[in-house]
Image (cartoon, rainbow, N blue to C red; front, side):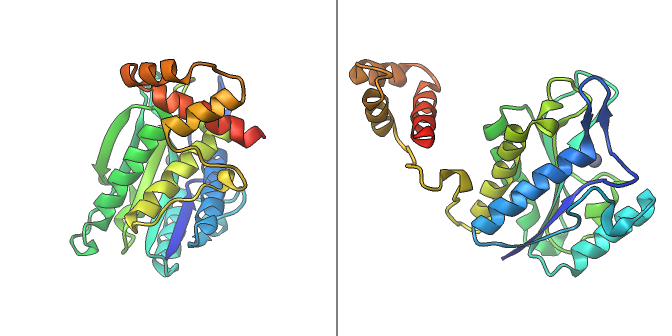
Length: 251
Ligand SMILES: [Zn+2]
């Protein structure tokens, strides 16, 4: 399976910027795309990137050429699906949340809508950001309208929102976004997802395993109490599993 990754903007075009936080969309898009590339290759996919540095696609110097180059790149890539990475922006500084755009060509076997939904769901789960839904490409959004294969464009939070702009600049948060995309892409082909960050570590998958690890590390002493609590308090089980997983990773 081959995936084409298109980090939006670059070069002459920084994309959206936030003067308060210093976030620049083109840089965040590229950082997420490079991480996604690494994770997908780790999962056995073939990948191709439209850019690997701070230039517009094909070295374009205007938006029209940049978009045209992206369309040609996607159509000639030989990829099964195309994923373009962006961050959103709005004049209303409180606008927030993630959304995924798609085109829905009738002959694409619904794969595009399926992928858009999967990426959106994984993003919401992993980042905790609000879902703004999947959206059929509006007129004027150039890239995905002309790509003749399943193609989605993810907007991974608002740069114009001071809080959400950290998803564009923070390395750990960029990994979370990239992993959410990779998880969705694996699910599209019913493949088990492997995180490159789990390598060598023991994957903690259930509450019993987690409690055992926490007892062994002297974090808790009464696993029965915590097991009962996890049955009553929402998300406590995933919190305990995460804690145990982190302990395994630092070992
Ligand atoms: Zn953008």
